[in-house]
Image 1 (cartoon, rainbow, N blue to C red):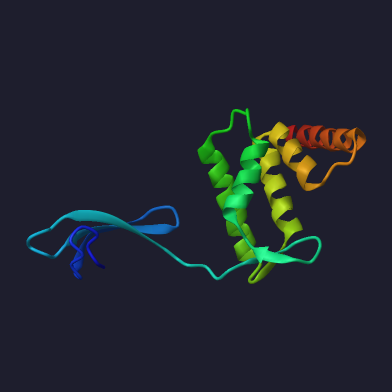
Image 2 (image 1 turned 180 degrees about the horizontal axis):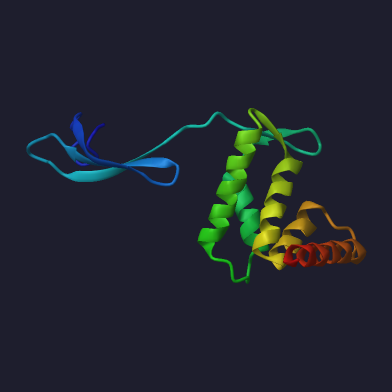
Length: 156
């Protein structure tokens, strides 16, 4: 590992620990004139996962795109950013575990909706209205009634 300060080719690891799907390492430059410390993070590089869209197109899975959609659904709701990020992490982990190279867009949307349903009903309905492309108020009302029914069953 090259030192980011003096560009010396040799550094040593002082401390290593796991940190959210990555390894955090404290390093020190071996150059006697520098000896500065810095932190690096190592993350496993995953093989690209392609999302098969409804029209058959394929595009690379984008965690950021999923995160933006869920953040938009959670706007003005009392949901901490950390909880939203954990939800997205969970969806990505499940999708990568179940699908090796290609995943249907429906699988991602359904997993996201299942997790949102348990976090916040309003955010769930907002996400579902875009994901399922509600065409009218009736469809919207049916989804809300289904959510209410599901909540009553969970309380029992």
